Length: 148
Image (cartoon, rainbow, N blue to C red; front, side, top):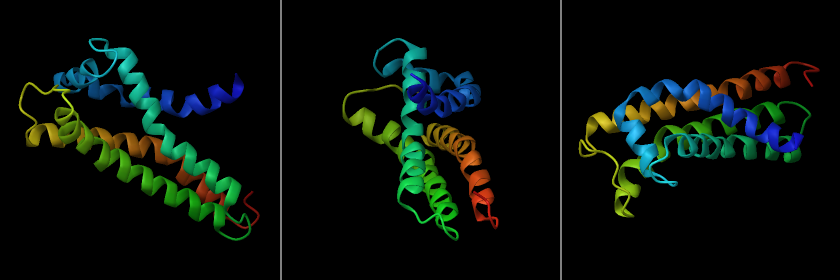
């Protein structure tokens, strides 16, 4: 149970800090269109947890396989934060705007225009900042002499 909580905690914290984007009707429409259809909160939490997975996988892979001597862990955490940022800041919005309508999930009543892209990229970048901050802090600690 504690392991599940430790893995869910980053996504839940990110979900809480990501919540201001729910003020936008388009964002609410997106989460209502996702399974379970019509239910905002379960979809929102599931997506927030899902977006945290690359960060968690990167953390585990770094701590398990990177050389702790020197800057191995520090570099791995920075690379994880950057890769996660690309996934949440660019790939996730592209999936929402391009991919979902192609598989029949139509959610933007305004037509998936530039405003929608800007909103989703801003939300993705904000999520990336929230998720990457602890990784960057750990990277700094691990980069210090005797940091671990």
